[in-house]
Image (cartoon, rainbow, N blue to C red; front, top):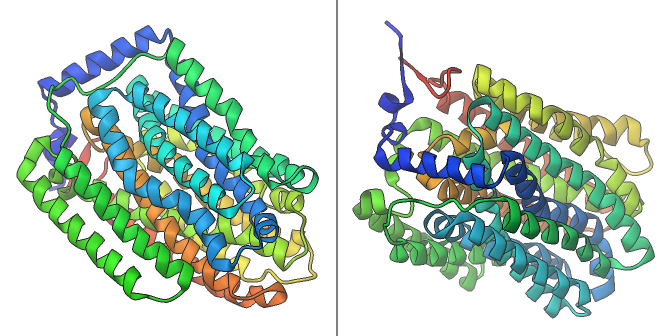
Length: 491
């Protein structure tokens, strides 16, 4: 007979203990010091928006950057990958540093690094200096992103957490909507270098609020950082992603790319062995992966954001390069995406806290897949409203269902002591998935003008398959998830 059991009995990492209780008390004290949790929400929005805004602005500026710097297709990919490589390699370390040494501290450090890097990108007049700035932006994002969400998770609980995460997702979407319009105007009238100045007000706001209105939150247990695990994770992820980056830019598995990829896989294998021996003191306690909910959420993240990131990168580029759109028009073409996500995310975050995340996280990716298939109809010399608009609306609707429930469910899938690390791990997976999108971009960039449309359609079909698999992962992995505050339904 089916029965209901609590998450504490369903999965070992949900069991409350003294350290977790102490963490919750410290988190509440931090919220009290910050006068109101809303300040933590505002700070998290300002900090994490840096990554969203920077990505959406860059998408409409890539054709101009390529023309201005006379860059090849491979060099254009490095402008994207130069940011993704350090971000994915260091984001686990960024979350672990925040958990142990203070999440506010490392958010401030990461945000400051991102601001300096944005200035470097803005003043760059060569591809080499731009790549340096992009890499440094990746380092800053690796430090600020996991700690931003971990601080937000500490400030709220229950339905309020779901609503806060929904607002966080909606605010990022609004920023992503406005940024391409402003960025497109800047590209047309000032120059592509100016788009990086958009980041600076968000840097200033996030640091100011963090210093004055947000209390520090960290792991109360006096355990040292898993230094060996951190080094192995960073080197392993870095080597693997470097190999994938070389493969995607060269569209050929060269000996260097193969060697780097194999070295990365070996290092990550050693990392898993070390973490297994470290038990609860590990950088990533491996007991988390025994829970199908945790594992499926991370698999879904990798698949869905890999497909979605590909669309955000490919669609504006193709509209500009093959469809004759200006950068501003390409930004406007994507406007339904942030509008729908900003409207629906707070509602879906709260709703998922009540009914459970399984159906939103199953249906959302399937609808996203349908949007990709509609996008294969895009061609030259056609109406936006009959071909581009339907695809963007369907794609946007699917993401609006999934974004907030996915983020909030990941944050509550582990104990409070490791939210920074888990947020970093989940973000690393989303960025790693995006690398495959860049590989698809390389195949599209091999053509020019109208010839872009054929490879573009093939890439969208691949994205549709990947998105549908993300929905399958959620449906299977969350089958025993109960809507009643983390309870699981026993088979």
